[in-house]
Length: 253
Image (tube, rainbow, N blue to C red; front, top):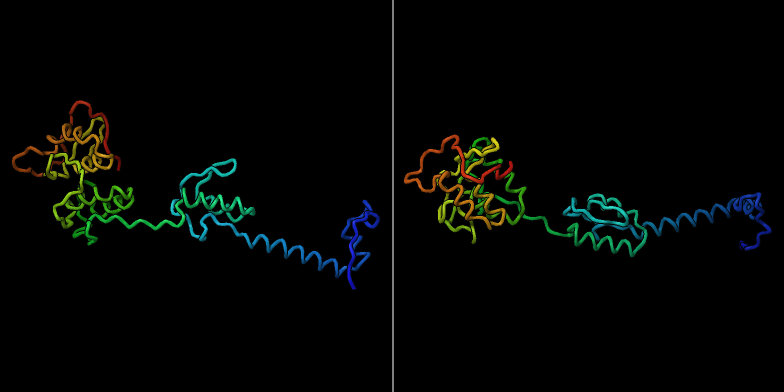
């Protein structure tokens, strides 16, 4: 037998719930079946969309990038977990566009930066390259830095850690000693704020900042870093830096 549902309000008085009145008219089993069908249909629509921030379901490469979504700003990490709650296809498509453009969905992971440009291991990772810093620790810092700066780490820090070098420096490299490598890369210079920095890290800083102020670094530090010494002397623990205009630490560790 078939079930006929009518839109008339005669069978559904305001004092009774519609479901209860239908149960009285047609019995409990048909009504439960209708509810089960409705629930299954609702779930099927939700599962079918299953929105993800990255259209392939992967985790965003740049999960800390900030994105304005609706009325608030979220990190890509947060949006990764918000995406499944989106039920509108257009909103999901817009969200995935954001994932590709800002959150770097689908981007390949950058290759790790190794201090030895040929990919070989450092001869002595535990060697203290500057006071308080080993080559292994420098390797970690190089890998954490921006990809574009890897070549500066390799050219300036790599040779000090014993990495093989073909003698070809990257184009545009800034040398504190014009045209040559530092004779005393581990020489420490005291700055006016009471901190100290090595000549090697000063040279690295000159390059990662875009080397636009290369001449300033050469004028301020070349003499203190021993560029003009006839014979490189053993690096002292510290050499006072009193050059006018140097008012603070140049790099932060």
